[in-house]
Image (cartoon, rainbow, N blue to C red):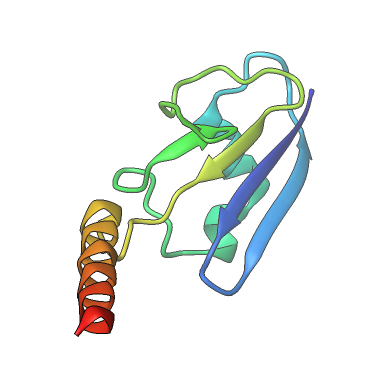
Length: 98
């Protein structure tokens, strides 16, 4: 089977193509890709993983053409950031009326 393993930092992305056997798990694919050697900061116990943007467990069996993704922890809570932007927008709009 042909799969891809992806990992992205803020300023760099790595996408590796890999041939694996039927029955290969998500964890086995990540290990076989060498991604853990390239990025030693990846911690499969803490970092979430997925297939095509959907969270998946390490024991998930892969299918042909799957893209395995390793996700970094978020630096900021997206909900809090949106809330802050909305508050700033309200402030700016109310400032224009005075």
